[in-house]
Amino acid sequence: MMRLYHRDHAGRPIRVAWVLEELGEPYEVVMMTREESKGEEHRARHPLGRVPVLEDEQGFVFESAAICLHLADLHPDAGLAPAPGTHERALVYQWTIFAPAELEPPLIESAVHAHSDPERSAAARRRFDEAAQAVSGALDGSDYLVGGRFTVADVLVASTLAFTERIGFADELPANLRDYLARLMQRPARRRALERVTSG
Ligand SMILES: N[C@@H](CCC(=O)N[C@@H](CS)C(=O)NCC(=O)O)C(=O)O
Image 1: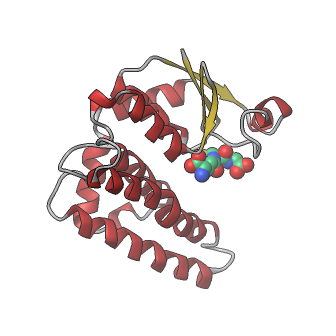
Image 2 (image 1 turned 180 degrees about the vertical axis):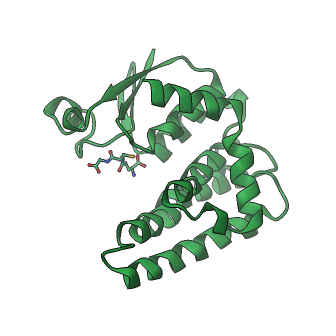
C-alpha cells in the first residue's frame, strides 16, 4: 500500500491525499511531528525534511506537484491528466506547475511579512493578485482549468488558492475564483482527504 508522509499542520500533503482519494487508491498516512520530519530517518526520504513524500514499492517521491502528476499517470483511465504529448497535457503541466511556481511564493511571502515588512508584503500581494488574475482569466466560464474536466491542475491550483482562507483574504479573490474554490473544496474526494490528513 502507498504511504503518504505528513506532518502536523502541514498544508501541502492534502494535495496528494486528494488525488489518491479521487483515484480510489488505498494509502496509509504517516503522521510525523516537526522533530521527526527533521530527523535522519525522514531526511532519507526528503533531503530537506519536508512533506509531502509518497512511498510506493519502488521508492520515495517528493514535491507535491510531481507526486500528483505521477499518481494521475498510474491511473490513466481516471482522466486526471490527459494523454502525454497532447496540448491538453501540456496545459495540465502548465497549471500544475504555475501553482507552486507563481501563486504560492508571493502568497506565502505576503503572509510572512504582513507585520514585519508591510511594504514587502503588499508588493508580494500584488504579484499574487496578478497570478490569480491569470487563473481567473483562464477559467473563462469553465468549471475547470483544462479541457472542461477536473484534472490534477485543479488540485494544485485550488489547494494553493485555499491558502488564502488561512491567510484571511479568500473573499478578495475574483468572483469566479471564489466560486471555483468553493466548488472544488466541496468535492467528496477532497473532503475525505481532509479527514484523512487531519485524523492521521
Ligand atoms: N515544494 C514543496 C514544498 C514542501 C514544503 O515546504 N512542505 C512544508 C509543509 S506544507 C514543509 O515540509 N515545511 C517544513 C520546512 O520547510 O522545513 C512541495 O510542494 O511539496
